[in-house]
Length: 142
Length: 416
Image (cartoon, helix red, strand yellow):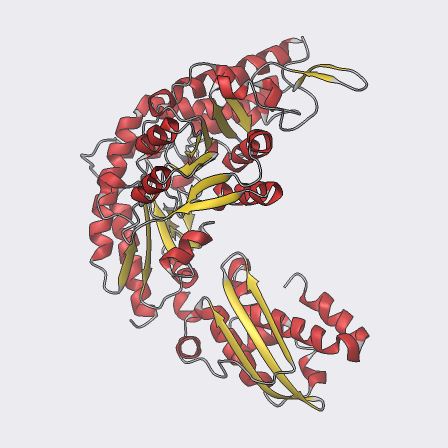
């Protein structure tokens, strides 16, 4: 079981996170934490037209939360916002290859998606209030 | 499995049905999360069952037979609690929902009456959130101040900081301190703290949530003014906290929660409050679980709290030695088992405690991971979280061995 979770790729992203750091001149920066575990993630987004031009994350926490964030940044770098805003929980779990996490650990895996959604809420707040509203409701209960 | 220790653990384990169950695909349960809550012996489960099966009714009011039986059993628990901590009388024992509510009762009732602008309340860096947040709420409301006494790098309280504070002529309105840390296991020099505080006329609240379940505690000898603890951390049910308050202090305190049971007479615009301790127990209490708690106290009394402590010192000494031999482990808190309870916090390599707990769970080992409701202490230790193993009367050296084996396994999974 543990060996299934802590595969090489998870440990690699945990120890060598991609796109980690601050982003100067970010269009949106957002922070959230998981009160159960104390995992923390900040996501910084640079948006160019309708694409994610650059993304960086900062954070600390367990291997699952940090690897998931790292892998998320790789997944959405350069992607159009329209596809990013519809990302689901299953997309993330599939992306990190952990489909059988228990209820306690699934929150770790989804924290970065929650932060990303909240970031996009902020981005869309003035530009597209309807999308912002939908993203807000997506992010609750995550 | 022969154990020559202070307790007949093998016999004790038979009294806990849950210890027979298997977890994580057939592994025996190794329950090492006792600082969070302990398991319950059959006697406690049966007492609750018996109440609901045979004499469920509300207490203190009705005159029918069921109510009378329930009231007698409920009040019997109060007598047992008073005796267990050696209170002078049952008037000094208040039932709450948990230790947190007990401390909040002090902050709300005593605190709002006595704490004024610019007053200082002293707490320490080892406190649980339940002994921090109520004082933050109170001091911010009153414009009062909160002062922390620090700890040294080995997890001992820097008592000298408090001595210096008092010697400098600075005042404190109240001191509230944990008797035993729920993270480091540190047992603080509570008698000295109380003695030096009383010399300056400062009352002391003791958070006994971790100490009362694990060692003999005598409130008269200690001379504390308030003590809070929880039934569920000492074999009892959840939903029952205890607040001990010296009678002469309690007599001057305004009520906490207003409503039924805490009154003598209610008129349109005024109320005469009930006698002690009922004045502080508004509404229907947790009758079943208070009654169940009596069975837990009986169980501990039969063993003897000296023996409980002896067993845990032995197990903690053994565990500290074994864990410290695992490569990559950082241990927090005092190394001498005489100065600490059976609570061991640690980290291993770069494995986050939540990942470690997941791996442990695969081996049937239940440990706690996270900040343990002690984020101020985590900041002081400069770690985001720790893993924590904590023991009780039913834990064995064999279980410590399984736990250490799982630690080695975690090193393998994480390739450290």
